[in-house]
Every structure is written in C-alpha cells, then in structure tokens.
Length: 443
Image (tube, rainbow, N blue to C red; front, side, top):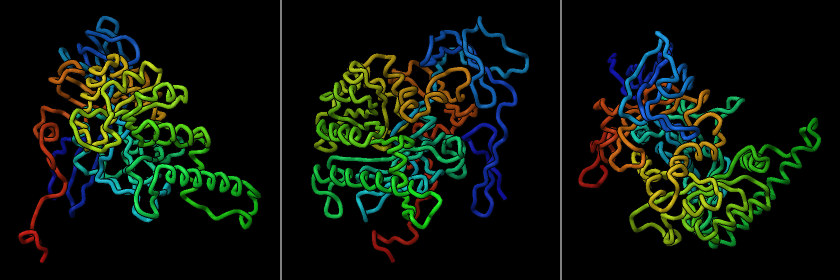
C-alpha cells in the first residue's frame, strides 16, 4: 500500500489500494482562520484596503478592516498583505467532467441526469480551481432541444460526485434543465429540421407535461386510475411548477424572442445563455425579467448564428436592467482565465461593479444560491480566491482557492501549479499509452 500527498486540499490524504482512490478528509477549521492585511472585495458592501476575513467551520464569521476586528488567541492568522481576496468564482455554464448526456434517439430527453456521467477525477476540475472557480453549473451539450438535467457542484475534494453536488433541503441534487434552440439542435428526423419545428416540438412536450400533471393529481388514493410515472414528464412538471429553472442555449435575436414567447406561454423560469445577439433585444429581455449568462470570445470562428457576438452585449444588458453573468462553456473558454471574461465586459462598456458581480453574485443568483455563495458576507460559505493583483488585470494570477474553508488550490505547490500553467491534458487521470495501436491500425 502506497501513501502519498494529494495537493488538492489541506488536510486530505489519499491512499491507493487495489487501484481505488480512497479519500479521507480531516475535519477542517477546528480553529478559526483569519486572512489579515489583504485588499478585500466582498462584492456586497464596501471594500477594505487593509482587511480582515475570518472563516470557521466552512463559513464566514467576520469581515472588516484591521482596526475593526480583534483576533482571539485561538485564531490561526494568515498574512495576506499585498494580496486581493474576493469571493470564489461561479461559472453558470460548464461542461467539465468528461461528460456524456443525451443520445441520438430523440431531440427531447429531460430525464437525462448529467451527474450520472461526471468523472470527478477529470483534470478539468483541477484547472477550474486553478482559475479561482468554486461553483459550477455542469450542463449537457446543446445538440438537443431538451438535453437533460444540469447539476450545481462545489469544487470540494471528492471521490464521487455525491461529495460535490449541492443538495436541497431534502438531500437531492440541485440543478436546472438544459434546453437549446437555433442550429445546434436541428438535424435529420427525429430531430427538427427548422426553427419553427423546434418550437412546435417543445410546445407539444410541455402540453403533455401539463396533462400528465393533471392526470397524476386525479384520485391520488387510487393508483390504478393514474398514469404510470414518466421521468421525463416529471422533470418538465418541476419546470412548470418553478421548482427547476431552465438554462437555455440561444444565440440569434429571433431565437431569443422564441424562448421568451415559450416561457410566457408555459410560465416557466429561464436563464438565457450565450445571447450573442442579446444586445439587439435587450429591452425585450429586461421586460421579461429573465437573466442572461453571457460568453465573450475574442477570436474569429465558430458558428454563423454567433457572428454578431459583441463585447458590448453585457453593457447593453446591464444598462437595460438585466441581471447579467458570465460563463466559460469550458472548453470554449478555459476555466483558468475566467476572470478575463469580466475584463472583456468592462472593455465593452460594462461597469466594474457589474463585471465583478458577473463572475460571482449574479451567477449565484441565477442558480438560486445567492443567499449562500457569491459574496463575502458573514454567514455565507467560506468560498474565496486569493489573487496577486487586481482581478481585472491580465497580469493577475490566482494564488489560492478555498472552498468552504478548505484550501483546494495553492499555486506555490508544484503539483497544483501544473494545472494552472500546463497545456491540454496536463495532470490527466488517464495515462497515455499505445499498447494496442500500430501506426493507427488496431490489432
């Protein structure tokens, strides 16, 4: 039996036994931990140029300037002078985890749970914490009108997905429903061949869900008169009852308006994702009350329906009163440079405050987690990132990332630094080998 240090977290030992990783986590923070002397950007409330942030048992317990807070003798003190501390970053749209979602049998598969395909050892999770990310919305792809259920995860040390996903009050995994329109979900039958057919299939499915809900509600004491359970329709009923929010892939202005139309018709909640042409219909989005999760890319290529993507989109949405966040769509944007998205938003005219909220609190709000994460507020989870400079500077590096009071990334550790600076495949959990390949031909 070999024992070795696992640099992903403080107080964590991993033992390799018969090819299986067994994770034992030491109870963190028996002592309060105080970060002293940093510039603290809480997102909510005033900044502190010489701040003190105290965390204990996974929560933020105190925040203020150095002359406002007295430290007890039992507090472990971390000198953070010259550093910047802000909340852990939140990506509302990620595909990390070596995921596989819905298949080609149908364009509508709401029963699919992306958590059933997540590989928690995928190196993408390590790259994410190297970029300061602490919470992700992991989604199926956009090749289906309804691609399945998303899952909200904290980037805690984990040996299985159950240790990462965020639970509701009943212990169930929290997440939304991935939907899409535009060109991605079009194809040969059974997939729709046009935008109008796409909308009609969605409309038909939600009508079925309404009927299913009504029929299941009849004669609850007599199971024989009730329709058999349908996991897909059950998921859509959760959407109709606003217990599950829709995360909707959409680019063109007309596709955005179609989403608004369907959401109004069936009265469900939506976060619009990508919205490349959101700047063309910002007032309509604002009137609907929907939030937008935006991606900005600065290189040519991609799909024609995103040709009018603009750096000004976040600023136009912000001025219209739309709650606006950013996302990576990892690998479209590498999670390690997520802060750059906020900087590009400012370059396009967004306010600094709005841009920083866009990688923290705005995303938390869209995931219905704003009371728990997204800002440095007493009582919230101790999710934070320590930087060596201003968060909007291209020269700034993530030094440490903490999730619920546990350090999960430390750039000063060589193994961790690999994930911050390495190329594709750095730290891969799957060794490369060619035992069965000879010049491209299988034997």
